[in-house]
Image 1: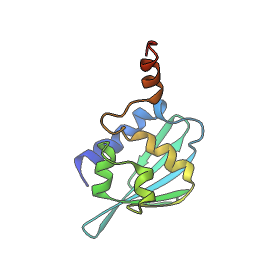
Image 2: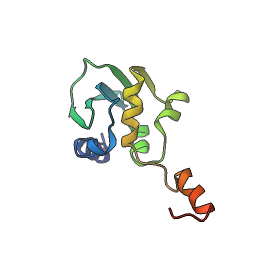
Image 3: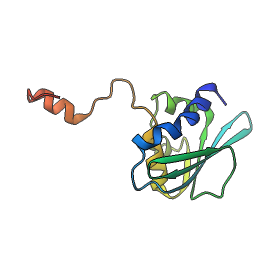
Length: 126
């Protein structure tokens, strides 16, 4: 596991009030694989709060990713849903938890909100 991954998970509880809305209510197990080893993270999400542990289940959903892909996700260099659709990672269980968790990842560099771009093009304040 990388230091960036450790810092990412440590930051989740303080970021949860701003990131998690009312739909996130359950436990997501994240399995990160590298070099024939799998590290487990258990993320208990409730509206506005997160608890993190290094345990395995029980979980409402399980997401498997390589540690290298996860590092790209936390750097904003990859997108979680795209990775699942390309079969670079796998997911099973309550999809709402995965969709809520992906909000913790940063947007790719240079990403703009289309509403801001439309306001700017129309000459309105952003």
